[in-house]
View (cartoon, rainbow, N blue to C red):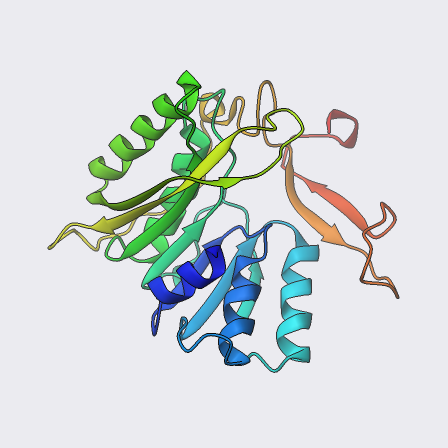
Length: 243
C-alpha cells in the first residue's frame, strides 16, 4: 500500500530517498518496471550511510535492469553535495525523535528540502499516536520547522502504519506530506552538523551518532548479513571502543 501511494504521488517526477531501510525505493521502481503499476517516478536516488543498503540497491537495479534506480553513500550529518539537488520530491523515514523533540527528524527533512532546492514536495514517515503525548509534540515541532523553511502540510494520512517495534509494539506512524510555498526561495545553503546539542539523543535516549558509514565487507552470500561482512567507519574524534 505504501509503495503504491508513493508511486502515484511521484508519477513522472525525480524522487530522492534520504535513507531507505524499508526498501520502498526498490519496490516503487520494480513495480513500475514490471508493469504491476502504470505509474511511478522517472528517477529514484537512495542516499544512505549503510554501504550494504547502497550496494544492495545497486545490485538489484543492475540485475533487474532498473535504469532509473541508483544509490549513493551519504550521511545526513554531512552537507549535501551540490550534485544532489536536482529532485522534485523527497521521502524519508527518520529516527522517531522521541528524546530530542524531533530534532533528528528535522535534519532528515532539511536534507530532503535541500535536495529539492527548497522548491518541491516531501513525504515524512513519522510517529502518530493519539494515546501518547510525545508523538503529538514531535508532530507539532516538525510541522513548525517545515513552515519556517517555507513548506506547508499538503496532506496527512494519520495512524497509517504499525511497525511492531520491540520497545513500542503498538506505536503507529503516519504519512506527513509537505509542499513548498509558491515563490519559495530556491537559495540552498547546506552545512554539516557540528552542534553537539543537536546530536544528543539522535537515535534515542543517550544515543548520539558515532558512526559515519557502515562499510560492507565482501561476501559470497548477499542474502544474510553477518558481523564479518561489515565494519563501522566512525565519526572523527571517536575511537572504536566508544561505539
